[in-house]
Length: 265
Image 1 (tube, helix red, strand yellow):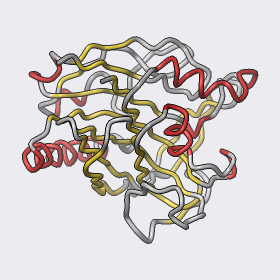
Image 2 (image 1 turned 60 degrees about the horizontal axis):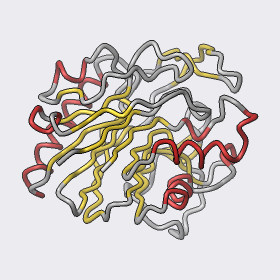
Image 3 (image 1 turned 45 degrees about the vertical axis):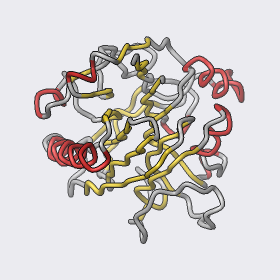
């Protein structure tokens, strides 16, 4: 089973000439059975008003997908809190509001979808944001609500996806909260947990504040010339031994490069 974590940046193309073939060709390159996505859209004008989780599931022939919206509207611009906290698994849910959040797409059947609220920082920060030409610019961004979501798979594994706050220390607090949640899931469902996503924490900090270890060493940001890793695939030491990192070359989508591992049983 191949598992990938990818901050999707709502599918933004860094190379516009790649066109409509960028997504299918990238997904074929990744060859993933389970993809955990951050910064994913549903019904957003900027991304063609599609449900991107369902779109990706269709391309790779996945059996299921789950989308955990974190807000209604567009982050960095105008948005409001959710009225209902849920994991959406049906494209025909009836809600056509523009939403944004994280998702998991899986070829492996999912027995349970779980969601954990992580809150948000009351302060924002200036962030370097990649434009369509791939260049970075600084803008002030207020923090948004954050969640963790889990897909309990029918093969004995569980994938927990996160996109933590970019505000220092608050993201560490969120990570500790998620690691405790992971322990509960592991016990309740008798499962092996892989924790992955965009942690917004450089220098391997997640391994210093949890009992998880890194399964990947690749740098992921910015995607065209990675200098730092905000993205991680983590697991307990006895599980990391079963995970083999699959190197991902530069791709045309997003300012984050995906991380992938293969599980060897």
